Image (cartoon, rainbow, N blue to C red; front, side, top):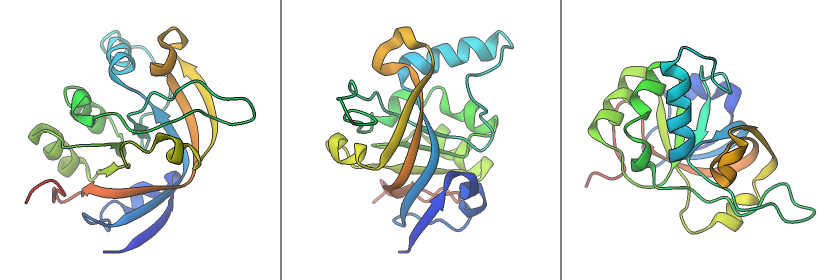
Length: 176
């Protein structure tokens, strides 16, 4: 297993090299989206409207940060169970999404879409949202403000610790 320090702008070029179990310290722009935001994103897609961010080579973090305390860029920001977004993920990967970040297993359909698109699934440590927040340098709501913690946010990561859980070949950390 290897360690990589990767900027999100370069992540797509690394996807073929990343293998299950590799450690990735991710820096750069990442977007949050959970269940309610995914539903709204798909309403935009189905209506032929522009998305709140460019999906091409983007990274989505399944997270709903807590309110931001004074003098910090973000509140606690741990991963949400990824399987809840599995119904949406294949289409987003087919549209150019580079990676997703969350916790837990993914469906066979998502794994096939990861392979088909040369993407990766990265896992963050569940239950450590306050620790994860230490690797986030900024947070800005960019869409669906009415959804509160589930709004789409543009985050800036700095060496956010992740593990490759499903690689572009379809190898899966969750298969024994």
